[in-house]
Length: 434
Image 1 (tube, rainbow, N blue to C red):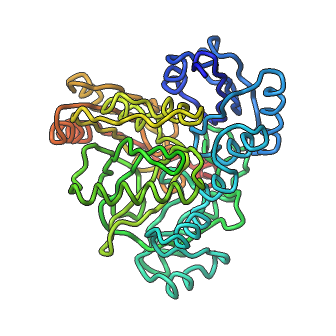
Image 2: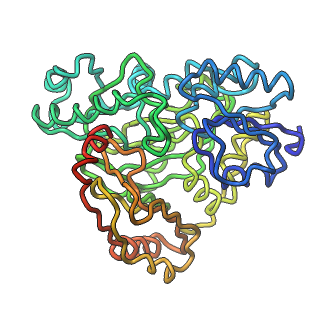
């Protein structure tokens, strides 16, 4: 089937123009299923259908209604919070993609852990926290300190906390419980991920802390075969929270380590997909025993990950996923041997952003591929562990070598300074709710 004839549906909380342009470039007709109409111009889309993403059955019904009028060829899973809904809708409509059970397991770190451990894929020890008041006992019995506590279906670094004692645990668990108390239809500005977490029976887990290098592996699997699209090394982070400051390719891994994480990532995705065609974004950390899988999303990485893969290989992961879902063969990946880094300016504390210094540094950065400023002075900003958006800005920089892009990244990080004032006393109630 020619892509110019393909009608693609996308279920997403906050789609971006890069995603839209990537698919329109190959001639796709696009239908968005979103909680609210995007701020960008949607006049060149076939349709924008507003749906309540916190009510999956309603979303599936709305997608099916549209499909009955104008048949969709593919439902493309690109947003982590909707991979399970996308799989369910595709299953109901008989469209290609992973089974709902596999997508559901990918969204719950405990279900994924069970599948992986059953199939011999290396994973950190993971236990469910059924009684939050007594979860420290589960840690001391099965894991030991330090340990990680997480929302089982959290996204990004939201709701991920390292604890080193019972007191740490009792403090950290309060953050997670406050997040779970938020209404599921909370507005996207306050918590754009709320519709996606707290939906599983197991809501909180504890996990062995993995102290080594962390990488994200992006791949495509189809018919039992896999293709690695990119491997990105994250900035070292020791906690207690894990805001992502950067991801870079090439990594510092040896050739043998690259081969090992590539195979582990492909195995982890295949264990969830039952050999159905899918993208995979797999996060892996090294330990003394070797690399272990932390989590795997059955979708391409975020927009900057996709842009980074395209910069290095010429392959757009959105388009590659579409190709395999349409029954085409995997593309051959050839790197141009350049380097790329995507980074973020982390919000250090919650409060009101009063001023920003150093933004002019971006004017002096060569091969600055993109920069996004997310907040303006006077706006409220929120930090981890409870924030869904703990960054002031994102940027994407290219170069000829790892050292070059790292130098640019360090310069940006050293130059930009945020001044944040405490919330006013009358706003403390709002702050505590978040």
